Image: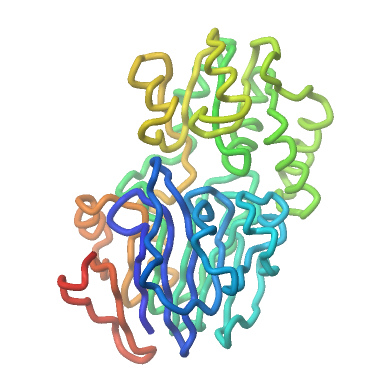
Length: 368
């Protein structure tokens, strides 16, 4: 068993991990970004028996055009329907929460909550590899299924040692909303938007752009929304008008894209006249970064990745022999390892293990 981080380890970079297990070579995600121009290098990867997609965000699917067309793609039906990349049109179905066999390897999935249709994946059973993809334990809209044990865990660690719960982290944004708006919130259509919409709807009028409304309809149709939230999401769609580029500025306006680089968010950012808040990663070289640097916009985090407490709970539940922290800057890996006392946090891009023995750290010469 061998895990190679082609991208997504030691930096806030696109997801792309190669797992070699039971004679199969399986690629987990193949993304682009989130900062402009970042793509994995697949030139020396060789044969791929399949590509498994955790969810449809660009930093997980944006570079699927690099994947050879003879390599089968697998994604859940909602991710295929939302279609964050044209290549997903040829994807084969992956269960939302269940089990299948791909290239002779047992693959188990569960809902990961971070995005509609997103899943965690376990390859090879309890002695294999668990890949969380992007995950959150704090969404009121999208459920999270419990993680199973695994020898190796590739864990979303994008927040490092950040440990502020969403209920507290959201307070500054809710205070902005109580000022009455207009409040512009650019975010991915298939992400935190619905969670923010339900929280803000208790304070002021909320409108969603067509991209968010389409994803919300898909999520409801596929039964992705938690029972406690489904009615509120349905009412939001039925009782509000779509947010358009020339719409009047009032209330909370939730629009794609996440860095106001495209769509209704880009148009409304250019119009001005609203309190603009970015709640996710502010990517380099984007209108979001420029607006924040110029003081025209603010960054206030809305939790969509695991906190330190969540990572501790993950480790306690999965009992890994080794944990690879993904999507975290290299200089912060040591800090996280210290905070996860008792958990073996690996610092190498390549990790090898026998199913019956503890993983060993690859020599530093294997770093890329």
